[in-house]
Length: 136
Image (cartoon, rainbow, N blue to C red; front, side, top):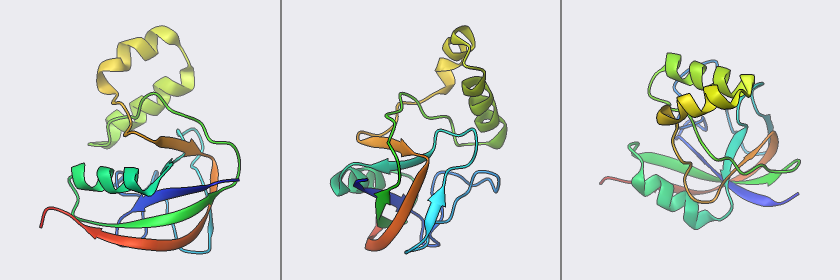
């Protein structure tokens, strides 16, 4: 178990996902489990990586949460497009098949995750440690 950092919106929800079937809520003191057949809950190793992500993102207000990992983390090579639901579903379907040629063909729709990103199946949200406003 280790301490990591999670970026949420001001309502304690996933910031990249605007689709109900993928949204998770991160309330202080609660245990959160990743949705089935997803990459997991994406966290950052250090707080500076969270701040950099926030500054480069299109949203304006964030919370940074300190979390405790409940299991082993997994470094991920790619994240899927979060712009619209069909492409996100397609991304996860391709990953679930675990077919190398499908994966390679889908590469153009995938993106490299931000530096320090690591995925977990389960975390405990300890506390909100900072609120950030960008693009002032």
